[in-house]
Image (cartoon, rainbow, N blue to C red; front, side):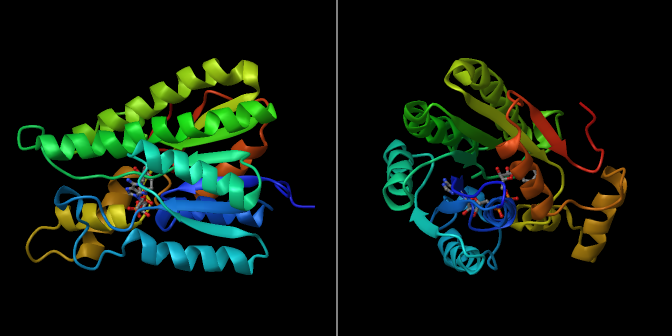
Amino acid sequence: MAQLTGQVALVTGGARGIGRGIAVALAAAGADIAIADVEQLASPVQQYGTTAVDGLTALQATVADIATLGRRAIAIQADVSKKADAQRMVEETVRQLGDLHILVCNAGVLSASSVEALTEEAWDLTFAVNVKGVFLSCQAAIPVMQSRGRGCIINTASIASKNGYPGIAHYCASKFAVVGFTNALAKELAASNIRVNAVCPGIVRTQMWEYLTDMRKQPGESKEHVWQQVIQAQIPLGRAQRPEDIGQLAVYLATAENVTGQAINVDGGIELH
Ligand SMILES: NC(=O)c1ccc[n+]([C@@H]2O[C@H](COP(=O)([O-])OP(=O)(O)OC[C@H]3O[C@@H](n4cnc5c(N)ncnc54)[C@H](O)[C@@H]3O)[C@@H](O)[C@H]2O)c1
């Protein structure tokens, strides 16, 4: 029997990218999956270019892929920065899949700007999704997990939770906050047998990094060249991480009965703490 057979996981921002990698890995390990995602990128400060795939289009494809693994999979349209949506996504998961064992708070946004040029709107959106979204999702799930006497929460933080990176100070601040929240919540919920950990991805070529690569490209430079430069300059192991690498850690955390309050890097050696 697979490790997570009989368990139900809810993954926010699971339509594409890292969230999709986590959802597929949890499904391959036996879990039934609910994925919550938004219809479209939230605001003009958060556009990843005209070729960007919106969350709901990707959501349908991911749910169909998970169903082919023989798992139950449902799609829920929900904006994690809205309390009513966060409550509804948990209720829908329990109503349609019967329970909630694993919550993965993965939805996140990024925009690049110097602090000097950063708009208040960009700051607010970053914190609304990356920090408040984690809080609201956890708050909605905790009563369900407490009533069952167990639970596992996994928050997607970042290497930008461990160190500052220029040009994304607001994003770094939001991801440091995710780790602080994770640490405190782990202690708060330990007596309820609910474990709370964070995954810290390094550099994964999702839509988020397609955007960052575009932002770094100089006139006449190819995007591929920029990407290879980033990998060679920043990653000791010399290769980018993949969504399935983060999925592998999520499966470990979902099964690691004595691990809580940790923020674990999957980054090819970029950050060593
Ligand atoms: N790509 C990387 O290298 C990297 C590194 C470290 C951390 N992260 C983090 O990993 C997570 C996933 O990022 P990704 O790289 O896969 O990016 P992505 O943009 O491909 O995926 C983000 C997903 O979150 C969804 N989303 C955005 N706002 C939402 C909201 N308000 N409510 C619900 N869903 C929402 C998007 O629709 C999308 O499906 C984020 O938290 C990001 O900060 C990414």
